[in-house]
Amino acid sequence: MEKTEILSIKLTGENEHLLSGRIDSESLDILKDYLDELDGEVSLNMSEVKYINSAGLGIILAADRRMKKNKGSIIIVHPSGFVSEIFKISGLDNIIEVSL
Image (tube, rainbow, N blue to C red):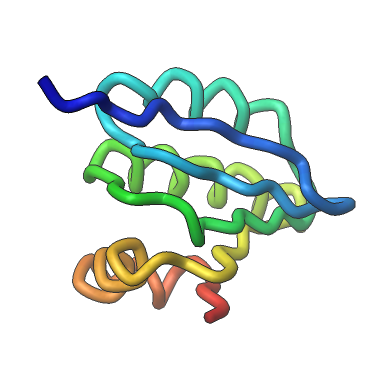
C-alpha cells in the first residue's frame, strides 16, 4: 500500500508559508484552519505540493477573497509544476497572483 503524504505547513519567512505534501480530502481541514488564522499579504510557497484537488483550490480562493476585503491577498510562490498547471487550467492564475 502506498503511503500518502500528509500536508505540512511551516512559516519560513515573515509572511511566507511553505506547504508540502498533498492537498486532498484528508488535508482540507488542516489547510482551511491554517488559512483562517492568516490575513494581510500572505505568500504560499507551493514548491513541495505534489497534488491539489478542486476543494483545495476553493479553500485558497475563499481565503484570498476574505483577505482582499481587508486589503490583503494570497500570492502563490514557486508552485510545483503540477500546481502551476492546475492554476493555469482552472483560470485561478487570473484571480490569485502566481509568481514562478
